[in-house]
Length: 299
View 1 (cartoon, rainbow, N blue to C red):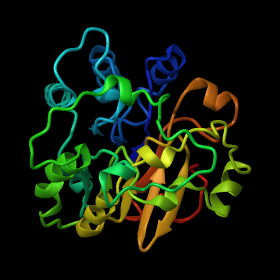
View 2 (cartoon, rainbow, N blue to C red):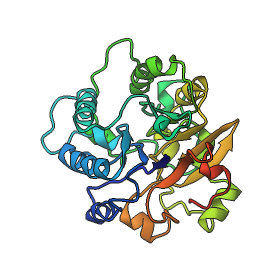
View 3 (cartoon, rainbow, N blue to C red):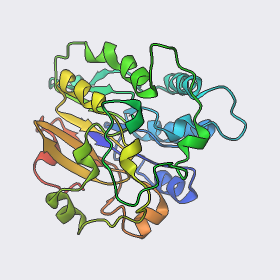
View 4 (cartoon, rainbow, N blue to C red):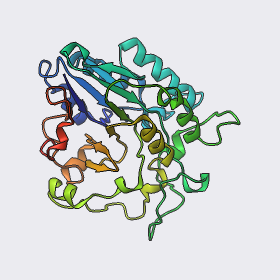
């Protein structure tokens, strides 16, 4: 039993759809795939992509990202409703969006995969934002598509979208788990992850240049409340997406991994490097440890 991860598939791009269709139909037949969001804003394209992956992997876990909650092409209603519509679609396809233990059939103790729903907390929304000031930034976030395509309808007790989604996780966080936990979310749980470490730069062949100096990603990166839940879970590994950068490091006992497909132009211009042949291997039941603890060879 192996666990792989891949985020930010963005199959609205034909090159990404072709890449996905090129994944082996036999190599992963006994394996699990974690997808931390941003497959497509179009529900039909999302469904086709998830169906394709479900045919290739024994189990597929997924949480919606910000792109999934965009209201475009005639979508009415609000983004909360669309979130629950997507969860229902996943259920009909056999895609896991709730905690599930896998790997017990292999004779080992298995591992729990725990999806964590999330949203980012902007600096003006209170404590827990991952905001870091950036010289020359545009604080209006005029170019940020969420400001144009997301519509919320929240109850009074949910002060922010981040509060709403963190609240949905409480049932999972409060459970007891009898095997190692791999959690995952679309959004970032810590500020440190926005910046590459020397080891990650070496693994990637050098630092990635900032091609959008006016955009401050930290305003929309994630929220600190997510990491609090990761710690309460006792996660061994946490996988995330959203950033379109590869990460693999241990912080205070938790290994954080990001491995994304991203946009074709990001792969062409070197913002996303060392994608390899597909999803990254993060867990192997033969060793009962995260494969990536040995080195960065999978990245």
